[in-house]
Image (cartoon, rainbow, N blue to C red; front, side):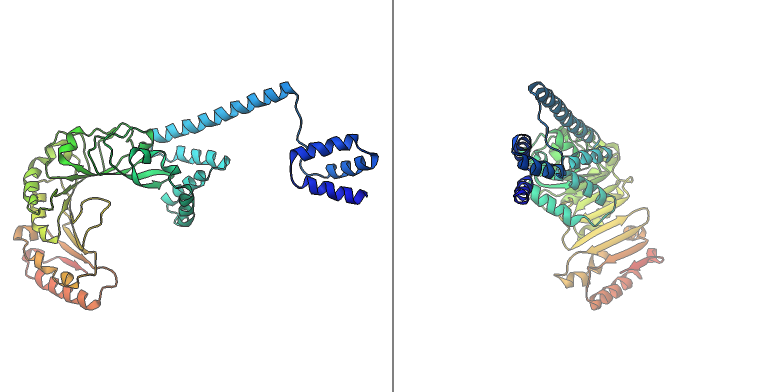
Length: 393
């Protein structure tokens, strides 16, 4: 009888129900001698202590104490978020915030820690990150989707890239966004402290845009008007034709003459134009009008989110290095026809080029590479100014 009773008690205690434990403890004090003996022996071997009981005043004091810590924990989270939004480039507050979330068994803490590691060069966390992001859905967009944000991408645990259709962005969570793609009228917002790349704004909107930090890494503008009275001052100025009209490069060239005197161009060292390899002569002409520019880029789309089509061009003025890169394999004749736009370069253009690099797509047939190399070398040999040129293919 004692053996059977102990087995029943152990089975009941295995459910880890505090109510069962309290009931058995009372039975151990009031039951029959045999039952008391069996229960006391079993309860004594129980690993965790019995849940204590409290008087009414003790329970009230404990509830007040717990409420104090809950408020303090929420205050700690809010304070850390405020520190993150105040200095979005600083990883310190993010690390502390991740620790707090991990202690509370919040999976976002793990995501922040993993993405911070990857930002420092650890490439072994992508699969786990994707699993966490799939489970979270939009929960970690910090409400930006309610302000029309789409295509939100998290980096270092917080939204870092987004597309938006709203003119004014007011949520404090916008502070962590580094790249913003604009699909509508846009005037900025005081919360955009971490913004480094702004793409898709129209030239006639520039005067109305206000940002906490107007010095950007990239500003991609639709249109060629550069004389707007704006405080925005990017290091890379990307200009795109509003109607796909290639003649607009002439307007760009005229506007560039006074670029260094304008706020829009006072920091610009790179000019990215909407064009193809055929516009290389016009691009070099435009660059010559703005001496502070050291780099020219030509691609079909001068924005971060759209890859160039087929060809892109880069000219590094201080090194005199010209790079022609081909990004597709759908038209091999285009690759072989590469020397054609080079023939349009004037002696003045050629005199600025000291080395030429052609970047072919991976796994391109060796026959096409060899044929193009021969054509380019034959053309360069006719340029006296490029006697010392290096051809890389």
